[in-house]
Image 1 (cartoon, rainbow, N blue to C red):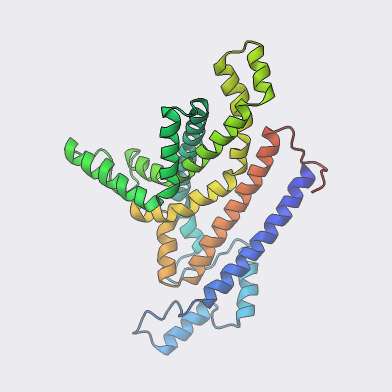
Image 2 (cartoon, rainbow, N blue to C red):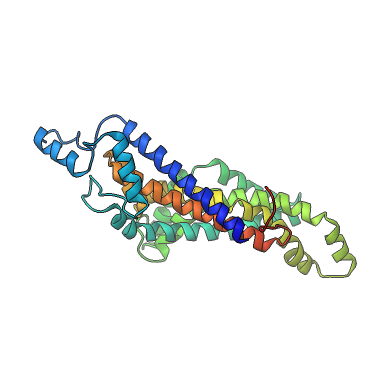
Length: 314
């Protein structure tokens, strides 16, 4: 397993370097500059700011300096906020991370449960309801789901009850965290439920399930101890992309619910052409998702003993 992990870490570092290069080039290819919006700024002040942020150097030199700083943990200073990007990320990421973890838990638990019930009750009402929820979740964007939840489960319920039950915006209190987490989780939960249903149907028709039934094991034990354990393998495989989907989708949901997470700073940095903030948040999320993907690969090998991570040739 050690050899496998070392190889994956090398791939991860190469991927991260490529991400830094692409982000840097795309950032500087965008028209305009971070200080163009201030019409009252004098050429001397603009030149001083360019020198302060290192934008007066040749592009290749800026890239080399930036790559060196990134691998030292320095993501630069935001031209919009005048603060270190790492400081801003340190303050805002815990909020986005909490939202993402809540959504991921809802996605996994809800998706596995819906997919399992749909497979067990194939062709019946429960199957139809579960797959209808899955289709809606895949088809409707998260910001539409967020707006509908705000209107029906926040505004209308609050008006009928005469007090605030579900806060429409914000991130204070447990009740304020339910709707954003569910809005962000619905699409991923739908994907997991459809995948789980297909995998569960294959598992239920397998020979080992027939053998378990012949031995007289209870249906509950057969389903949850044998069928679900094997059917969940494809779900573990897609947890990496699903985590990426949830974290990137959090930007939009954070804007709709006015949550003070990284989405707020990321969207603002794009509007203001804040080079350091754009690249810093992109690289941070990229590194985070690369690590998550590596952990999922290792977890898959631990959960499924048939997967060998030692000296297998790829």
